Image (cartoon, rainbow, N blue to C red; front, side, top):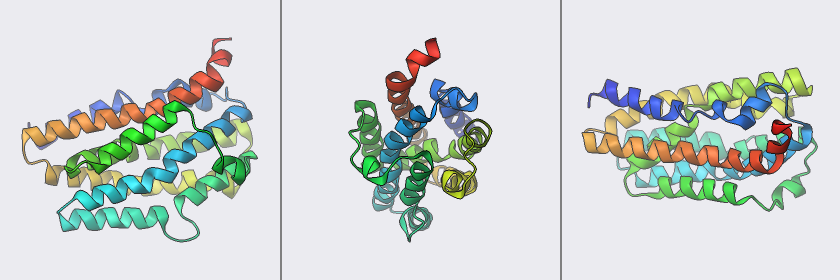
Length: 229
């Protein structure tokens, strides 16, 4: 399998499971969610945002290639360092929706959310860093387009134009374009054999399914009845 074929297969695996195809995000894009649905989503998805830095750090710990570790370290610093760390930016999104921080911290997460996080933590923690990198790519490669769509929906349908409401998505709209590129390059660097490429494809598929699983829980629990009406 050539590198070009590998990358095309990687993007195909993720594209078939792209988050923007999920009914929950389609309802967002069409203005069919109510604020209560968005609040529940914000609380559930916080668990993913909170744990994402640990996916990066676990992959970093399992990688022997120093240049790739440096790239992952930069990513991790962006995620967790300082008062504007990304979990904090998400909490500000919750603030804009009227979700208290105590409420977000005390959330009893849906089984779908817990399993989604468990799967991604497992992929990142495996000894072969290819699996962690592929999982990160499955996540971050989608985020620029997802963020743009979310910003448009928040402004157009929900009147949410404040910095707190948009800053998380604005940051990821740009930062993950860079992460997408460098993680793609890292995968090419590490996946020297067809076997490694297949391992990466399997991990990307599993990660993309896990991301959709969280949205499945939110949609089925809070949105499906309204969508069917």
